[in-house]
Amino acid sequence: MMRITRQCSLGLLGLALAVVTGCHTLQPVHPMPMTEVQPQRYESVILDQLFIVADTSSSMQVPDRYPEKKAFLQAFVAAMPSANYEVAAGNFAGPRPEEWKELPLAWFERPRLEYFADHLEHLGGTTDMHLWLNSWQDDVSLREGRAAVLILSDGRAPLVDTMLATKALVDAYDGDLCVFAVQFGDDPEGAWLLNELTHIARCGQVWKHEDVNSPAGLEAVVRRIFFQGLADSDGDGVPDIYDECPDTPRGARVDERGCWVIDGVLFDYDRYNIKPQFDSVIDEVAFVLQLNPAVRVRIDGHTDSRGSVAYNQGLSERRANSVRQALIDRGIPAQRMETMGYSELRPVRPNDSEANMAKNRRVEITTIP
Image 1 (cartoon, rainbow, N blue to C red):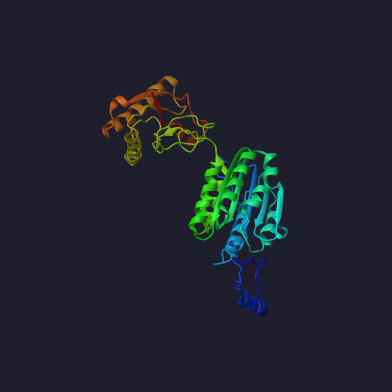
Image 2 (cartoon, rainbow, N blue to C red):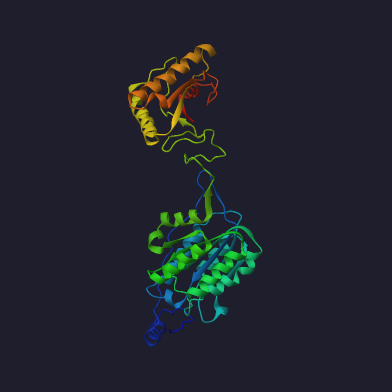
């Protein structure tokens, strides 16, 4: 294979060289516009170190994979979250490693990464990915926590050398090191190798460039690499450390506390009847109970603070029983449901306004053994 050590120049000289050497003139690709990806609710950056390795070898020349890769890297840098983590970057190609660009491991600074991405050049030559992976062993051996390697390549690299270098890097790190890759082109052996590297690391993911070459696709890549939500055992969207009502059944609609509230069925003052406009809400609760046939529940009635505690006790019980009967009418067995009234003793809002008192006139559902 011919080793090309420089990107073809534009103009007559470049065209002449292209004819003589077979060099393919690489046209630039403008990066997609991206802004910093922000954490969603309950998400945080979990990464301690990121190692970016970019393929600038001959196989990235045709059909214009290198310009697409460079544009993707530029957009990725724009989308990286601002946080306290370290980043290193480098490109791999042959035959002269002294022409490779290196960004040593240092705390994240976007301008530094932008300069690296903007000045990356197509060097041509062999795909010596393993040399970069080996060069980072000293860095990872001094670090711990959670790290990721991001590979931008077609995957055409020496199989055994690259796999051994990845294993050595994973073994040297005191923590979890995941391998992620974006494959440019559709070389099947390259896809196999990149996926094998994630298996060696025991975590990570491989994407095809065309599948993530959009703002939404790139954002998904960034979120997968950088972010992790807090543990949410019951999958209701509220992390365990904030969940006041653990073990809500699958499909249940919960409030900000993680409690299964019959959303919308807020009773009028001193009333316990369910209005017809709330039938669809009761239908949804019945569906959740049908979806989880082993679940038993307690239906809890609540009131606002107007009236005596004793009177409100009876009112809260009547509210709970009205919902229970509505569910029985929809085919839910009575033995799966109990009721409880809590009077005004468990408000979710201060009883200091009409809007807050309306929120407190509610029914909640709690799973029971």
